[in-house]
Image: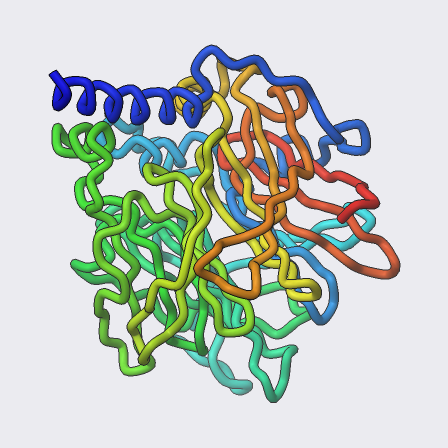
Amino acid sequence: ALVAAAVAWVVYQHTSHYARVLGLGKVYTNENTTSCRQIGHGVLHGCEDIIVDPHTGLAYLACGSLNPRQHWLHPGDDYDMSFESESDHLYVMDENDSYSEVKAMETSTTTNGDGLLLQPFSQDLRFHGFDIYWDPEDPQNMTFMFVNHQLAHGAVSIFSHIRGSDHMIHVETVHSGLLHSPNNVIAMSKRAFYATNDMMFPKGIMNSVSKNLRLPDGHVVYHSDDGEFSVAVPRIRYPNGIAQHNGWIYVASCTDPGVQIYKESAKGKLQFHGRIVYNDGIPDNISVDPETGHIYSTMFLKVQETHKFFRHPSLNTTTVAGTKIVRLTQRPDPSTGFDVETLLLDSGELMPSATVAAIQRRNQIRRMLVGCVMCDFLVVCQQTQL
């Protein structure tokens, strides 16, 4: 009887925790949303990730048409190949909501008297997470690394960009059997990176088994300057967002909800130092404000409603999915995790869900940019507490 009672207690604790995490039966009230507004309807859509240039305050937005995103959000579903005619786009935006496209280009096989010609990038380009590496000798020389969900396989596509130009030039696209389900990436050099690999089984019955049983079958992979792939951290439950600051590397886990703290123990190897557990939501991307070191984490509040919206955004299936954005401050002892402050809570009226929040500072203006992988707009919040 004592054993049965103990088992029942463990089951109760487990199920009640995940009922809270999934937002079952919860009703949310808006907090700190009055300074927020939607911008870029019909253009800044599907902006899953945002990186702000710390040297200029310009924000880079990885956006895309909503229909093609179904291919990698729901890889087991039937997919209409006509959606492939719709393109993804990288935009750069200033503090006045003025934005322009940074076009993806590649070198042509033909030349003229001035050297190589450029032509539009000819491969599949389906943005998910991305990062930027700034040349320490010349910060105008930027390297973009995009998780690219190509039809044939997951990949990371690398482009070079000179700040102020209207294009980026393809350098290489890399893929590997270890990169079977990439989600997000951090750039360590012009070629080296760490990437989260969120699940072992992108589709099929094992995908459902893995998610429902919360199997630790995701990992973080490393791609070296020499072009070699290796596993940096094995056995993580659905690793999603990844970010870095001052030698620390942070990884958000969805099915073990929270953010984990790592540091390089050697090239291509990360050592665990601590974590924070989320009790009221599921994290997606995380971003770091380089000026303060604060981490900004978006959270899904009512996960079932979020899934409905992601599958059928055009039907406006839900306005109650809910979003929470928290600011994390790492404690001096990383084994004790973070201090946490809620910055925004949206019941779904502002946006059905959010996948990234990033701080933009430029010309005395401070604001928070909020993107969503399946929304038809971007959200901007002018908040003094940032």
